[in-house]
Amino acid sequence: MAENKRQSRLDNPEFRTILGKKLREKRLELNYSVSDISYMTTIPQNTVLSVENGKTANIDYYIEYAKAVNYPIGKLTEFGISLIPRIPLSAERKEASKLTAKIREYIIAGEFLSNGKTVAQIHDELIKLKLISPTQVSSTAIAGVMRNLANDNLVKVDGKDGRKNLYVRME
Image 1: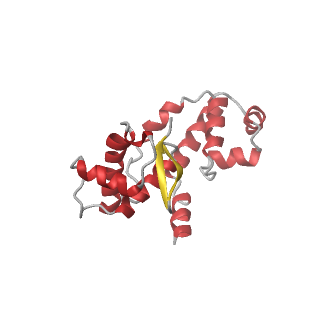
Image 2: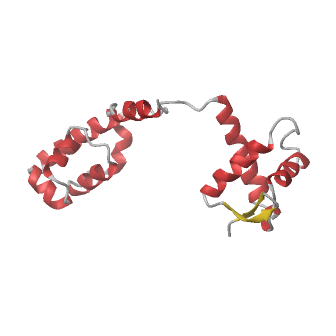
């Protein structure tokens, strides 16, 4: 199923088609050949044509092409593309982002994580600050947020308390 979603995203080149057409128009306006673009960007000629047709998914090619023809990247917002995600976040995921915001603002930004804290200690601190109710948010949810924050290099695991990770704020 994930592959179908990915393929659907790649098969729907709304913005790529528009951008490719605009880049081609700019190339023709400058009297450049496909070979000229290929030379200036080191992008193979067949890929230049794929960019112009909106068939290439790699944004780097579009950017290099735009630089070669001096096409302002800021114009990308003028295409009238709906800025709505293909798949909106579920209510559950929106709630998780609110929990993440609370943890970032009240747990990470302060001194609370200056020395290692477990998920249970973070949970207790959120309850103490009256940011969550004891039954509203599970330690599992907080552990997920902490893993994501570690992936974003905002916190790190700095040892263990038994089998439990000790989280500290990144400096």
